[in-house]
Length: 313
Image 1 (cartoon, rainbow, N blue to C red):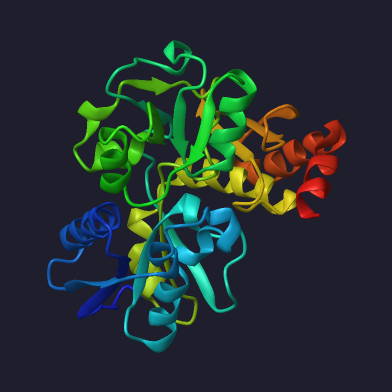
Image 2 (image 1 turned 30 degrees about the horizontal axis):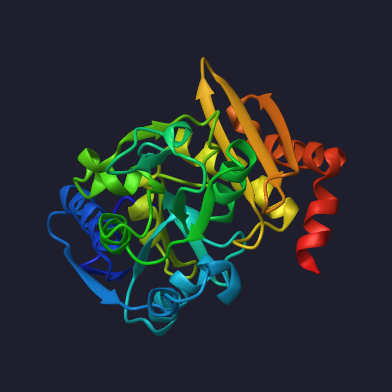
């Protein structure tokens, strides 16, 4: 970045209008405000296709990319300068001319068990209804607890909690990060270890997207880039990219860094949980892409290709 460059006079952030998405946009607003107090920062709330179609599973209507298309259109049109996303909603390939300028430090990446009457999945009686919007979560629940009934659960966090409270489900599974960010930690009956429920690619991290032709704007976002989180998330995304990961694929990938070493675990499963292919890869964090690709090859060598082929039919 040119040392003489001045921060932009204004930054408009495109965001979905759900409470969680607005929290995320406000969080980035505060971070940027501390860095560039002279910059006027505003949020442009938008309703996306993914927010409008609530009566069908995401996997059936086009996947999580439906949550960001309208935001990208606002960047394209110049109505907004950046968009803030949950990294787990960001498709593996961005449209031409777009870039991820920053990946922020990760919040708790685990899944959360939420119930008013039970303290964990193992406590649920036979036939109990568990709600989740994720094939990844569903396949892992069915694999470990085939006696439970898993049903689709759509809507924002508050809507999902209301459906639980109304008795439509005995328990629901949500991302711990979202509950914590919204001040709803007290609704978490138990945090599910990554050994029992491997998180989604990018879960708990935020991404900041902008046009790649925006001159020095990406440079002004660099202070928000958390290298360790980015290395982990990009390793996870490499797994998904090789496997063609989307909402239609029950796939999880989770990387951690400890003592200068990255450990990446990944799985592909059949939706009913009967087939579960797992892989693990380790290495130096700087080799994040190679680690992700190596884990994906192990999954394919273990039979993941057959599962993926069956899902594509």
